[in-house]
Amino acid sequence: MRIRQIMQNSVESFINALESYRGRDKVIRTLCYGSQLVGGVLAEKSSQSSLGKSLLLFSAQLSDCRTTLRLFDDLSMLAYSTGYGLGASEEDALVRWMSILNNVADQLYYPCEHIAWAADAELIKTKSDRWWVLSTGLWGISLILSILRSIRSIQILKRKSQTCQRSASAESREEAFSQKAVLQRQIRGEVFSILSSLADLSNAIHWMPPGFLWAGRFPPWLVGLMGTTSSLIGLLQMSSGDQGACS
Image (cartoon, rainbow, N blue to C red):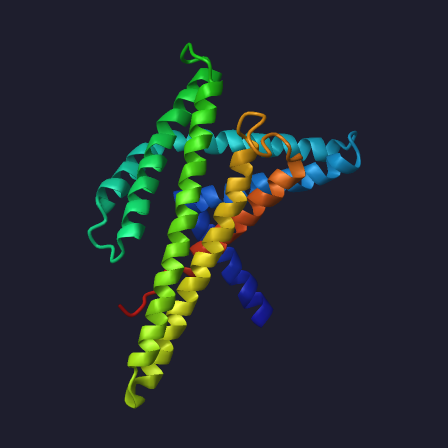
């Protein structure tokens, strides 16, 4: 009965994820990179593997699907950026400015990718290469800022954890322990965010022009592995939700 309940809950969670745009995108992303990982491994073992080729083609189609769906992300990103504004609610100035720059990079990413997409679809007359490079570069900058912000957030959370522990009286030790546990979960969340961003950053560099670090050197299965790692972390974070903390 317990196994059946777990399976039922898993199916319900999957369906709920598919019913939201962000959840569906994360599922499609995971399938995209997972297919590339398995297809790349099969193609590596045998260049004549029909299953490997099919999975790589399937992955490419899912990637194109996500690119097309992102045509409608500009306004939601703009709403998020304007809602965050200059980050007046942030306690730390470094976190605030890194978040602002991160939002700027993300906002500029979308129109650059849209132009590249339109050029490939021959809707406009321009070369798409420069726009793909620019959009990938903006994505990479966003990821670097996210990593630095998470590192800074971990430092702040560790200080808060130490403060909560030192300021706790004998009567409030249980409450302090609960607050510390929340902060520890937040720290783990930031660590996972760093790992996810590092995996994506490795792929972003791979897609830059040849000659830039390891650009163009990843085999398909390694791109799939990095993307799958990042996608699974994203699904895990989405299912776990946000946690509060003591100020």
